[in-house]
Amino acid sequence: MCSVTALSAMLLNTASNRAACATSQSIAWRMAIPALPLTAEAQQYPSPRLGRIRPEFKTDEPSRPGQGGVVTEQTNDILFEVRDGIGRVTFNRPQARNAFTFQMYERLAEICQEANEDSAIKVLILTGAGDKAFAAGTDINQFRAFKTPQDAIDYEARNDRVLGVLEQCRVPTIAAITGACTGGGAGIAACCDLRIGTRTAKFGFPIARTLGNCLSMANYSRLAALLGPARVKDIIFTARLVEAQEALALGLLSEVVEDVTALQQRADELARLLAGHGPLTLRATKEAMRRLQPRLSGDEGEDLILMCYMSNDFREGLDAFLTKRPPQWSGK
Picture 1 (cartoon, rainbow, N blue to C red):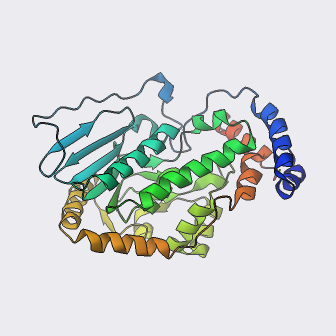
Picture 2: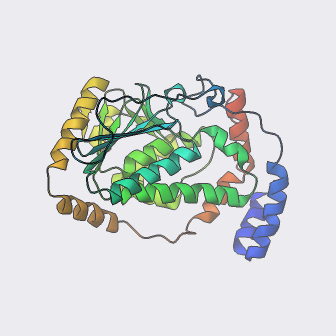
Picture 3: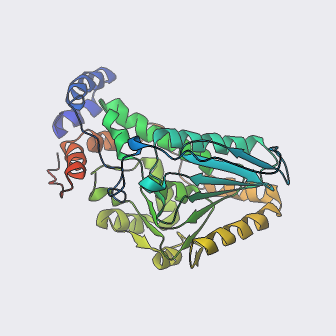
């Protein structure tokens, strides 16, 4: 494993030096890593490798696009249905508190692109299956494939691309949140235009006490625009989860309802309301708010990503997750 000093030299020197360090990192990361639990919030759930939900979709109506029609798509981990101009996206891994795989991130981007191209879709509702979580971050098993510094850069670049597609989606997006909304799930919710939640909703990025990694610059920028830099530091430094009433006060949530049934009803009401409003007004307002955020280059913050993901601390965080013990941070 490259030391922090070696890593700093790699970042300051040429691309060839980065490649040389990548070779040594590759050796370290090829060490066998046993199967890991999914997320901090989902350790008690069985591994998704034991089986995935494969729902069957049934409807008495013909499958067709457009107003009044129903379009459903069968996938393992994300459900997508369009009804009366409202697209409903459900993160469907309740056994893992809806932790995201890389494929789920890609599918979410595809759905947003479908909404961009289908004028019959007026609004998207994003929600999690079950009552335990909206989405509890990225499935930790995804990190087992990390072998080189480029793997870390590619991971955050993928997330930035997907979240960017969501943020720039043509139609309004509503996050309907119950339970854990953490890590990548909180990042997805932050990209949505409106966020409503139940009393059990909890937001956070507890990475300082779990894996010891960091967010991308795009995510930091988005959160700072939403909450302010001081509040972002508070939430990440303390690794605490913000509960529903505080989230309402901070602007993370615009409404809090009693339970999942009320959440579904309110999300549908909001979606129908927005679907009846002038689409160009909504689209222009979305884009104007996005343009107010700072513009960052694609490689901005790569040094921070490598410092964390290629560190001894990150491997310690993964091992501590596996053995269900507190990590012993070294700062290296």
